[in-house]
Image (cartoon, rainbow, N blue to C red):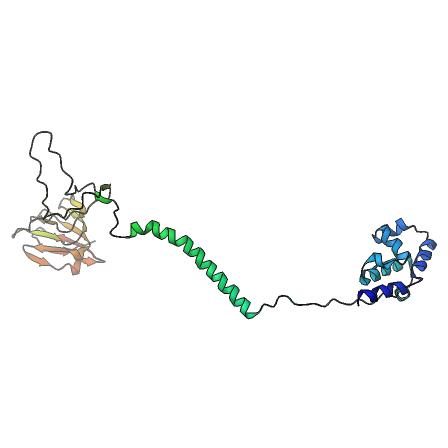
Length: 290
């Protein structure tokens, strides 16, 4: 319905307001009392009785207010609405504005991706430049040296007692670093080569040769502990006849046992890479009884 049709419908209405006012007066109600019961402003109630529909807005509001007023006064609602000749409620035409053309969606998606790439580049490039000197092997970063080792380029002061200092290593033996790069002390210990002990002499009653670290528990005939420690790789132990009576070897696969120069197979005495055996007074090897 257009605005002109709504105005014409309002102008042709007559008698509805007068009927409502008569019903209100017959019920002994004032405009203020009707306003309170209907929860309407007094001006709206007065406009309904004076049939001034233009003050009340769209027809949908007028019909609702007339229906409420008629029910309050016990007046036939259908007759009141028919007499008022308020136009029917015409639903508004809905126009969709959510459809986006395919080209626009592609452009917006491409724009968001370009923005993400730009932000990522703006954050990553400065970080890359800042860390490039640390990642580049040719960078002029400081060198580190363990406190256990003195670099070849550092001069060693002579002892205070006048003894000759140890000779400095030559350039052929130790490569020198450029003197412009300072050394920084490091608490990381430098691994030292394991001490190689001399081979076991022939004729020893029992000899142990360790090719790997092994925990040992060696007991004498009187029950006293001969040795109980972690023996490093490359070391060896030898015992004359009658010095030991019981031996427990951890990491037994890395230990070679010799008796009078003959290698003993630890397979019968080994379990879960731990060998346990006893040595009798005559030098024979037997499994542990318990």
